[in-house]
Image (cartoon, each protein chain N blue to C red):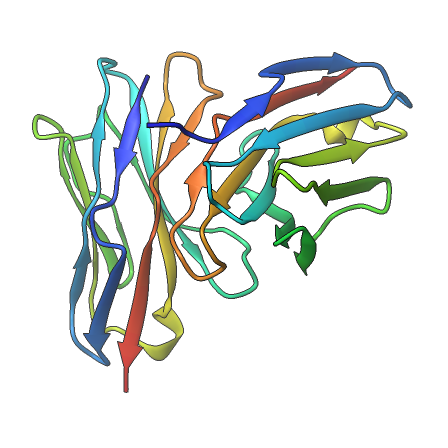
Length: 115
Length: 112
């Protein structure tokens, strides 16, 4: 089965600085999707960014970008110009492109933004 | 290592029927969360329990109810099922409410 590992339970960043959240995964599939979700205190999951495994170009959404290293099975999230509103739990997730239904989540990284 | 166990993995129900989804957290985890993820949608938080008491409530319909039992497992009861209830239902557990989560593999509910 696929596994998703987030090795940083907690991270902190100074406001306006850049922080990188790590995520690694294990799979034997070649077709899959990777996601970063943000979870504010409301516990809702908000999609931050998504990456298709077949795309070599790293996905970018405004201040959020990923470093997708397919061979290393690494999918880190970089948050630039961190804002107070970025403080949340961040989950990395994997979805099979074969079955299409199964999601696998990491255990989350709690990000604190220091004013 | 033991993970979060959800049962059943797949469930097919007809409209207006009732379904019960079960979640067995990691041993010693005292907090359980339920999420619903429709096709192509982000996971929606439904409800959570801490030490057998409801701790947070999200967008859980009135037709749904849940509880956490003395052994910390949780059940999500869904009545008067509608086609729109077809989704992947995730359970996650944690030790305390501010720690990292461990998600189960989900239950795929199909309402026909």
